[in-house]
Image 1 (cartoon, one colour):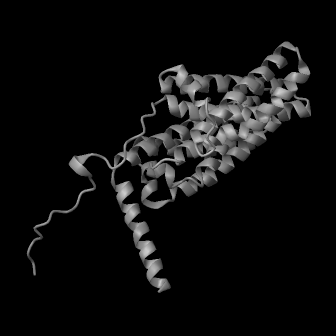
Image 2 (cartoon, rainbow, N blue to C red):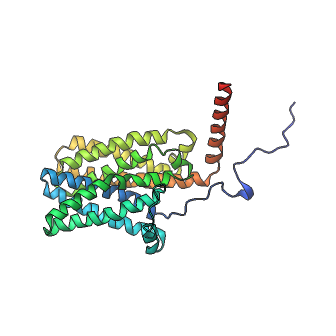
Image 3 (cartoon, rainbow, N blue to C red):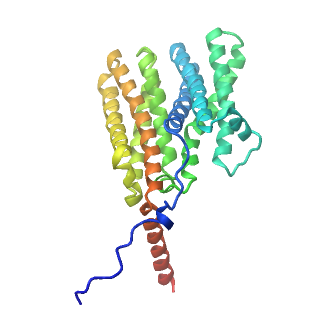
Length: 308
């Protein structure tokens, strides 16, 4: 009765020790920066249009430039990750509604053009009507640009991303909103920065609530708590909380507004790097694939037996 088992304890490895999943080949920091810049640009386009409608020229100028600059820098990061510019152009040859990457390409391309046209018109004063139409178009593409990347990474077999497919779009939307609002708070006078403060606060609330659901998903959420991704996610949560407190307590203080804005930006950037790193870590360790699969099979078997 006390004999030792001759069978060793199982280890979560596949054939010849190879991982069950192939890690994504996306590069760091290219892709996390692209995720961050897409959110910043999309949120800024919305903020710029709101500023135009309410007569805030300083806020509009900063937000227009942020939308255009974020889209341009994000495109550079994406092309650098792809390796050759023609690979991005090839993605525009065919539109596939079932592919988040294809849909995202057809969001990024028109957004970049519209945001650039709106910024150029605002700066030069030329073709104001066309500039306003371009701004409206960029604002319409802004929310999809800020969130489609969540669908892109969640539409993979990477456990930490796929299991959070319902929450990640809200995390990315909130993160993009606080980045856009934070940048404007840093660069715009407090007399015009009211919409930016409200956007950043709303984005912080959305991100905190959605991220808490992601972090509470049991075993598959473990990569969000450990190692470098865990440190990044912890930094993001703390920075978001500090920025929100500064926004509320600081009122119309220029110093407090600038500090809060910089902290919002840091929190948004840390969130993207944390989420990206957690996904890579979960793809590398087979236990995040094997154990959830066994749990799902057990639940299905229990449900089937309960119905008979």
